[in-house]
Image 1 (cartoon, protein in one colour):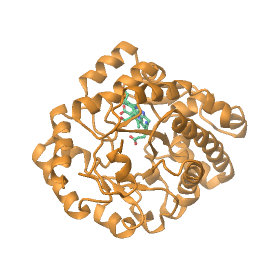
Image 2: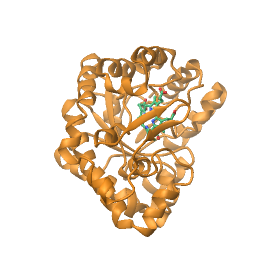
Image 3: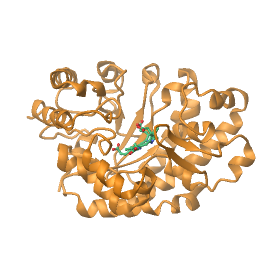
Image 4: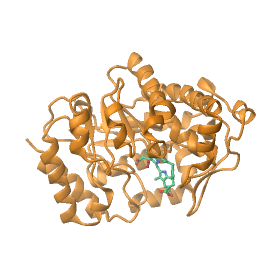
Length: 343
Ligand code: CP3
């Protein structure tokens, strides 16, 4: 059976423009909070294939999106490479043992050996596949090597990125070694996600905007393209979505063998269309806070629709949905996207 989401990723005609939301399986859903409470905490939930599958499917049933995104986290990758990850309530992710030097990096497990430890992710994918309707797509994902490296080097989220930028300018060789090692794990990790049953790959470069535009290719984009090239050669029928957040100055330089470019909310979608629309399908890019108000949501969808028309586009938010968005408003967003784009 044709999956409208996969067709849209390849720029084929679809009966309407499909829609999903980044972070759609999350805290704004009371049903998610209930399963997380059963699991005990967020990491236990990520490690439990049956419960991960359950929360992955929730937004399809509850808000009516056209694709599921695997429930997991980008940071399970460095965790399984041997770093010590914890999610601290109210503070977010923390590694107790950030990478400071080459010896720290050498201690980490790489390649196939690290990717093999993520079996709970592949098991979740198989369970989701069994439960998902044939016409719905399952999106698998990874963090971009740069975004993963920021946590591995800083040990946590950061506003200034001063520790990784100090490395970028004073010891770029070490940063490249870290990025290369992560890239090797991610290639095999995504290959295994595909073998387990995902339909689409998304690479999140959430902290792309921390790199100055003239250095973005060298420290992030080229590694994302390396992953895409590796997957495309083996799996040409699996669409790849690149989501580098906050890089409008890089639009002119975007290159690579992938299918969909995810536009964040701070980048005008008309600019992305002008620069990239002929080469790539575009995804996005409603400002997630428009979801606080239904009228503002509909107005934004209509503006985006006017620019993008009814092909070569996938509706989404320009970043993740926030935990205090009313479920009603998320449903409104999804049904309005499907309504305004219906042919
Ligand atoms: O999109 C989805 O619905 C799928 C699930 C998903 C999660 N994390 C679940 C999650 C995805 C795709 C991610 C990716 C992720 N994780 C990114 C890149 C995407 C982005 O938003 O830019 C990043 C940077 C992370 C790292 C991470 N995980 C942070 C910084 C945090 C804490 C921030 C916060 O909102 O509290 C997490 C935790 C996290 N990952 C939650 C969820 C649902 C909240 C945890 C909880 O239930 O308390």
